Image 1 (cartoon, rainbow, N blue to C red):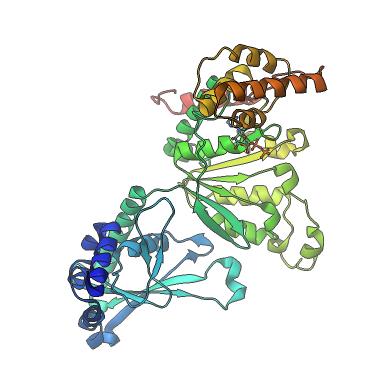
Image 2 (cartoon, protein in one colour; image 1 turned 180 degrees about the vertical axis):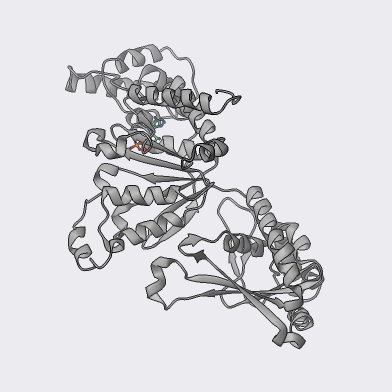
Length: 476
Ligand SMILES: Nc1ncnc2c1ncn2[C@@H]1O[C@H](COP(=O)(O)OP(=O)(O)OP(=O)(O)O)[C@@H](O)[C@H]1O
């Protein structure tokens, strides 16, 4: 195959990979262009541009779509970026391309200062992406990128009445067809997203089956209750405190929750956030259907020498150091966004160190203790790591686990040491016997996982009131 044919065929592969959407969204333009040799494409492309824009510059309208508006993330901007990712034509002179490890398709993206013309309902719409790299003063207001959409003024009706809704609709379809969960980590004033690769599910987390069911039901009930929260005038949010010794599966449980609900995780490192204004901006830029996670909350607040930094900027509250009340206010602000469900998870190894203000229901509604491995949680690990349900050594291990405390992480590590089941189980028996010798008085099984009784009662009380308030609603 000569180089021209290879170029055309690789363009076609991309078009196939980036979906049938391209055809529906951009109609005639790119479809014709796709069939033309490379050097002709840019001429045709600029011809389309002239057809729709050149004679009528004076009559053009431009709509600016910012990434954030008043610190809130702009859904229209996000939708437009998603829409453009499948509607831009590979014939453009300059494109951004990216590919995810677990994805076959190469995704083409509009690059900064590049233009793309989209044809919709016979009207031409010209898109251009901008980024302000110099304006540092706006860094934490997040207004760094924006799109400009230009079209003839006679098409204003089409733009407002049907083009925008078409974009919103298409972006929803594209996202649900290509839903990869993300984990967002805060870096400076922004969230940096990458794919959530954590494989934990409720099936693989070692904890009491009854507790798993309770948590899953609680999550399901929460996400279905938009109407309910709005009727009782409460923010649609649920707070979970997950606590227990290191290596007992707190992070694994969070990943299982995200994978179960298909929610993104926003893992906030409070040490990286210096001022309230930035904390608020970060929280406001979180998308719905997400879980905000703050790990090791006991150490996360006032852990650093923030006082000095903050003192330099005492001019306004926004520059105050981040205290517990500032964090709670920011969370309340986050949750005041109407109609968006919010799940907040704090983890700690030391629940007793936490301020009671954080623990009360309404803040942290459900408290989950993750503890040492018990016989039943060990069965889950044995099944996950060794694919066994029965084995002559299991009984001895279960007996030992009632006498010594071993975290699921310790047990998992032993089980991974060998693919030979006998060797792996013998290794675990040796570990447990060593632990028994080292601290003969240690109590085993002080824990496994549980939801605090107090909170279950609180939750039951809430259920009672729900039934009274929501007549006819089925109790789960
Ligand atoms: N309950 C559990 N179920 C399944 N695997 C577990 C569990 N607890 C720990 N593990 C295993 O041990 C590793 C560490 O667990 P994880 O990070 O979830 O613990 P953690 O309680 O969040 O620890 P830390 O407090 O140190 O952050 C995980 O990768 C997982 O393989």
